[in-house]
Length: 457
Ligand SMILES: NC(=O)c1ccc[n+]([C@@H]2O[C@H](COP(=O)([O-])OP(=O)(O)OC[C@H]3O[C@@H](n4cnc5c(N)ncnc54)[C@H](OP(=O)(O)O)[C@@H]3O)[C@@H](O)[C@H]2O)c1
Image (cartoon, rainbow, N blue to C red; front, side, top):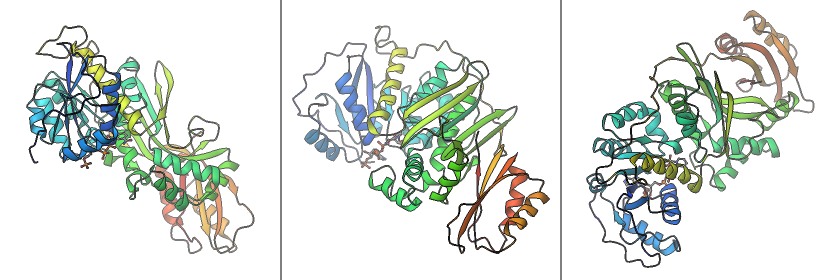
């Protein structure tokens, strides 16, 4: 990494705030969408308890020029050091490092380096926390500092702080959520406009809700990393994101929303985790949900998380799951929470700040067996070349696997060469259904693989 630390900015504008001697020194590493929003909020709302001391990014001069050209009236104080030398930040006297560069490398080394030098860390990095969260929390604890990652799941929705504090008195057994705004935008657009999947995806990309390569979103990789973090924070279960089954939303068609509507449902990408004894049932993928349910009502790119607890029952958390400003709110809130425990505002902490010992005991983390063998009713959609005996053949296979048909739906007016119809099944375990689907995949009248979706009632 090139080493360059610029002199204090020659910006005038905002008069420098008087920083109390107990102000908590904060360094920002990563000055992109979220980093800039964090800087803006810190500069606009600061009460002197937090002091932004470093802004660190590669090619920082360019970032600084762009900020100064566009930032008024949110000018960053003159004494903030702009640098592209991460090590100088880690060697400095800052109390809190905010990591907002994303990805695993070098974010992991930066976070480890900060914690090992006794600095608390705030990050929004879901990849990092999903893979190394448990380990990094232990590292933080060994070095007497804190690691907060409230923005890593559901952006600005304060579900992680709720799990770690507001709900830690309960014994949670289930968490389910709409955790990917891109998928929700696409699915709710198909629902409302009955446009093809490809058109909804292009629209999401044009509006900046989906990246050019949206595979991580569409195929469930993004949501399962977030589900792994929720499982860690809420169910105290350590799970590798890759061990959670993820089903793609790509095969969905506008006609699926017609058939779902006949069943009183719509379709959403749902991430769900249920802890039963030593097994964590977990998966991510498109599911039918009742139109009038909390999930069915979530539109556009919003996120919703529902938790189920033994004592407190069900809770819901809804809001903006992404975007610079909402995500930055979660980041700044984490920074403020650490600063509070460092005693910055009370004057209790001086040069040698250490977090106040938490009065909340940390539950032991388990490593349960991971399974996707949920039991629920099912929606099976077939696209077939029409010929006599299709339904009889499918019914025969289902009966041979002891699976009960609940309903058969067929809309009129489709081309007989590509006829979509639906069979719904009574509740059964995923593991019992899949051999039947295997057998159906070899049928010569099927022109697309059967689309199989859980129905969540
Ligand atoms: N954006 C959201 O809505 C959102 C929501 C929730 C969570 N998050 C998380 O927040 C984090 C930041 O996201 P973002 O959207 O702000 O990303 P971003 O716009 O791409 O910003 C990342 C910044 O880090 C800099 N950077 C990257 N690698 C670096 C390195 N090796 N050394 C120094 N600087 C480096 C980048 O510089 P260049 O400009 O030179 O590439 C860029 O300025 C990620 O972990 C993301 O998953 C984002």
